[in-house]
Image (cartoon, rainbow, N blue to C red; front, top):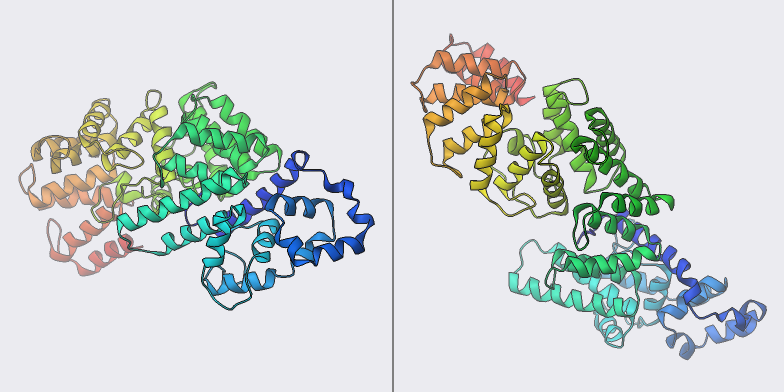
Amino acid sequence: MASMNEPASTTASSATQQTQAEDRAASSMPDITQLSLEHNPDIFTIICCNESFWLALDLNTIKTLLRVCRRARPLLSFRIARFHHWCRKEGLCRPDGSLRIGLTPSDQITLSLHRKNQETTERSWLVAQADKGNAAASYFLARILQVDVARQRYMDKHKEQAIRQRIFRHLENAANAHHTMAMFHLADFYHDGIGVNRNFTKAAELYRDLAERGIPQAQITLGQCYEIGEGVDQEYNTAIEWYSKAADQGSEDGRFHIVFLRGWLSLISHGVEHCDVDAFNHWQEVSTQSTHPIIKPIATHMVGWMHYLGRGTVQDKQKGTKIIRDNKSDEFRLGEDKCLTKFFGTRADSNSHAARKFFNLCRLGSDHDWLCRHLMTVCLYYGFGTTKDQKKAAGNFEQLANEGRSDSQYWIGECCYWGVGVSQDHKKSFEWFCKSANQDNSYGQNMVGFCYYYGIGVTEDYTKAAKWYRKSAEQGNRYGQFFLGECYQFGYGVPKNIDTAFVWFQKSAD
């Protein structure tokens, strides 16, 4: 769904799509071409230069004028420079002077006509216009308040909630006046439960209204609703139909959503024959060519796993690990340190759009593919895209571990080690780490070395610790490399050798 603090490409795209939507909706607007304004340019000029005339124009009339009369835009946009000056003072412009909030030409003209001349950054004029039912003013005010919230790193929760409710009301007012992008953002608020109780059904209705008008961004979002089953019955084919409608209009995001989804369908054998090669190729295309903030990190994460496991491509554990590690971000927090291994530090819980989509996709495939079930369980462990349930996670890990899955054996070992979801049992933890290590899992090998080094669940033995650290290190595991370096630094289990320690520390640092 749309982000609260959208990047330049997103807001610009939204404004472009709104303009396109206005053109498609022309048939539903009043047909003012009968006024023959093009044949009476002098009359039109006189009218448009009359202040009482342009102050009486509503947003829909301005949209229509811009569509049917080429003289309208330069005549009506004479105050836009002052409006942009106000926006710069308000901090709503980027360094290059463009607006941070996507506004169509008709929005900008509508707002500029009502902008007073005084040099002030007060918003009272905008609030007054919103109170009078000016749709562009209501939408713009809502987006300004969204920027305010995004700028605040720390804000009282009650104050933030009150502001979000104000944003919702402004969007609702603009949407009721048929402002296209206000309707889209209002749908997002219903979908995410921002300023209002979450309502997937209402969100889907709004997305559908916009999608049926031919707006690509809404078609993609409605497709996502069908893909996950939010507010509508889950239906992959219908999701692809909506993605295709967007793609047919030249939307690359629409096309990449189709490619991305087909990757999952190939992995879980839904409607197509199971094929890891197809899944890998589809995700690789999205990972390398798409810029979408939700599907790109998920596809990249899965490409990493396919390399790590050798599914659909030649196995290369180090390459897979690096891809997963480098892909980690605030939007998608599952990196090597939270997915392949369990490392304390940064949090992994998340309710981001990417996190929720990832969890839902893994859950959908959990009965068909062990990797989907394993990744779904990692999400449950952290609360990544879902409610945290570590007891259920531990149970799932143990089931997969008993099936011989080395990554799940490592994870149930971690659960037993820390007593998360199960009773703490270091001896049992060591046994699971050993099972994982004996299947050449470098993270399991590192933990076997760790247990021998500190005597956890087994008798302390530096020689065996160094042996297992080496097995892990030689597979390129940065943790095993570090701990093997420590063994050489202090002479634990191996002859003390600072030079060799430095070599392993350097490999880990690299």
